[in-house]
Amino acid sequence: MKILRNVVVAAGVTMAMSLSAAAADYVLKFSHVVSPNTPKGKAAVFFEKRLEELSKGRIDVQVYPNSQLYKDSAVLKALKLNSVQMACPSFSKFGKIVPQLALFDLPFLFKDIDHLHRVQDSAVGQKLKDMVTAKGFVALDFWDNAFKQMTDSKRPLIKPEDCKGLKFRIMSSKVLEAQFKAVGAIPQVMPFSEVYSALQQGVIDGQENTNSNIYTKKFYEVQKYMSVTNHGYLGYLVVMSKKFWNSLPDDLKANVKQAMKEATAKERQYAIELDKSQFAKIKEYADKTGKLQITVLTPEQIAVWKKKMETIYPEFYDPKLIGKDLIEAAKNTK
Image (tube, rainbow, N blue to C red; front, side):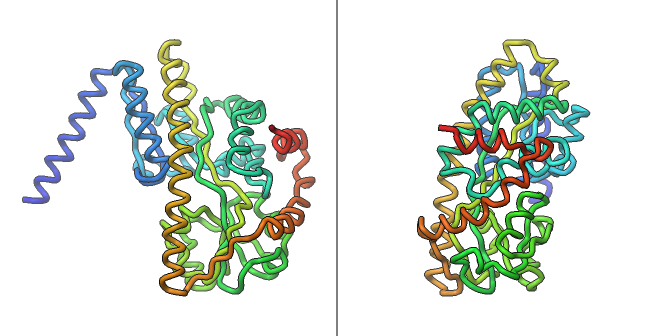
């Protein structure tokens, strides 16, 4: 009976979505890869409700979380085909088409979250969005995860040389590769889904990630040390199908921009709240079990890391990589 009831409920949901779509002038499928209770997931739902409200039901937004439609690796192609109308991939997924987005991977480039947002909302952010739009998408806005911390299984990471010889998992990024080489570590590109088992089995010694990812994927359970460094940033770019965008009349385009502006403000708020609450949960685990040692680096210790890691910046002065002008503009954004 329970199975039958679930089938009936699922059929009802599908029918409701179909009726909603039939009543709308446009259907916007928003595909993303995370769960609905993440900052990205919650902001997507906010966007859905707000755009439907602003457009008075003319646009039916359908959010598909947890890679129900596409993984990030396939979603850009799907956007080009208008098989899906909106997505929010991490910057690394744009590496081959707009490598300049690796600006956000540079270690210690941003003083704090407010400085980061000022850069994203400045001419620097607009230039990067224009580059993505020129490649056949419509770049709407930047969404946050948070700043990254380091964990490992060998020793506390207090100073850069403590990384020497350690194998660190990284996303596919030339910047992240250079970052770890600068401190004597051995970077290893690895899919996110394989990190927990690789840490557990000792295939890698450590990784860098946000508190959210460290907590939800339980990396803290298979690591002995965590250093709060806030050395790098992890974020996303919300993009839309150009074909879908061009099909909208001007008033609905204005509705999309307004809904996105409000959703971005909400997403940033959600990200800050989650980062704090999930770090508190990691600390609670560390205090309770004694199996994880957390080190919050002092400003003086951070300055040593910053000086060491900043040495990689000139490697990316070539405009085909990131460009000195973009790096300097981001650093000097007030």
